[in-house]
Image (cartoon, rainbow over all chains, first blue to last red; front, side, top):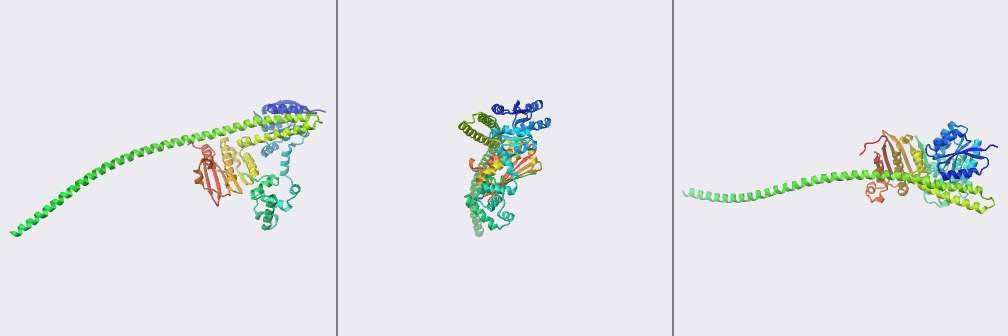
Length: 225
Length: 291
């Protein structure tokens, strides 16, 4: 069976050597080239036409994102896997928008590299688990999420969870009451129970808890005009 | 005849009385004149002194203005140098330390895969070590990001602020509503950095002092400029008192103002107990007149 050909694009020597060693131990994967700058990566990709390019997002002389764009344009059959030290959503979203085959955090699950390469070669996407988890939370459907949350926090009742979420999203008692179809007094009672059960004494504490527990993604409402 | 004699004697007495009065008056007048002359001399001396002191005063004012200008220039150079230094250190932290640590973890991963499957103890130790290294990498990243976030240079002001705010709300539980005009990314790097620092500073203040529950951050287009406002619903503070307080109690307000004015913008802060606090920064789109 033909090996999957890989081009490594990584400018830091120790990391690059480590990646090379890691992949050398893998059956069915062959490293056919190494690039140290974004420009070199594009050049080598055009020359060698590898199956997969493993690209660090922060490269000198043409950054990883731009190099990815150029490679995907001039060698459409090649898949590009992004390696990054940053887990910021903004970077991941950019990478996905470009059409890359995946996003791997360098410092965490580098052992997943070979799995990611094989998935990419098949035409699938692969993300490091923490990132996959975060993006999965984004579009998990509502009833599904509630079940998932309830399993993780058995002390809170279903209703209390709902109230907690609305409070953390910034709704006032009145709005929360309207959304849930209950009275304001009831909302207040739930709020008090929440604080007692979670041993929290101020409103910001509830928001903090909700974010930490993954009930809401973040407490920032962003609008771009 | 006697009557005319008497009359003449009376007249003589009157005359001599009048003469006496006249002499008195003359003496008094002379005395008064002398005093007047002295007064004039004294007044002239005072006027001279006053003129001299006014001249001295305007010289001092001019010197003070010059020194203020020099101070302002110096403080701008300092801010600029500080920003450059932060950028350099942040990059070094990323490129050298974080990368090297990551390299170590990658080598450890290779070791883990190559190690004898039966040597479970060894495998466990390697995993442990990897986790320690990973923690170090995260610490370095966090520190580097506080110094200067790569997002700001890589993807722009809005993603950088959004990321900062997400971490901020996670830490403090404060809710933030962030509305931004996408054209702000057209500003040059220096101006975007100024806006980032002002927001960073202002939000830090809200977290520490305001006892607020929500914050609104807006970046809007203004004629020929970009306007950023940060408003919290907290307890407010006495602006005048803080601006003139001792250095570490000034809440970084002077630093904010200095940065904004350094790029030709204007800065204002309003605060009242019932109304919370609003920080306003107006940055001209084209380079303002250098003062």
